[in-house]
Length: 276
Image (tube, rainbow, N blue to C red):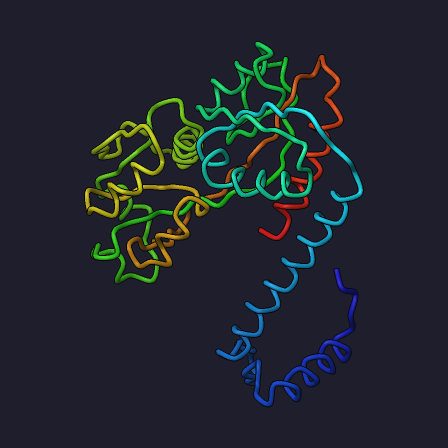
């Protein structure tokens, strides 16, 4: 919270508009609307704040001299689209740290941790396993995707009924993403078996490729598809009446004290993910 009064906010806004030489908000008697210039300033501001948070994480990490091996596991979304870049930055700060990352579905990662084959993990669903300590670390956004040529892309948003009429491409049974989607449908009174499932594929990238080829629509993490959206190969279909967020969880064993290296990476990862 900024704890600014309305006059203070107006003064800051006027200063910004004077600096940029244009209106950032279009004011009417009933409401205010952000102008195109305002949207551009907002995007740049978000990038600046993101870099500030990154610098904080990097400076804090430099203050600790870490070494050793870090054995991690992750389900497909964090393992393929989040952790590689995060681990790269972590190792750049701590050159004596070696990392091994196992990627599997959430259930298997939980089992690897329970069996002592990894020290910690990052998964996309809460597991019913009392041995595991599961801490929410990030709120991931799921998006409905279609080929950029799909007829539904002409709509500003789609209804749940539109989604149910389409051929759906899913990950395999047991994947965290699929479990979350099925649970959200059940909350809406929709049986997952009623979907027109066309394909079940073993990786998120395979799902995205099938969607790009026009074989159907799907729901995936925005992390997984953001580059394909920018390239114009994939379109996001905003959907009404279906909340599409799910938690990502950092997991360790309850009966073990985590190593200083795991603790350092956990704290680093929280700071790394904050701008997103």
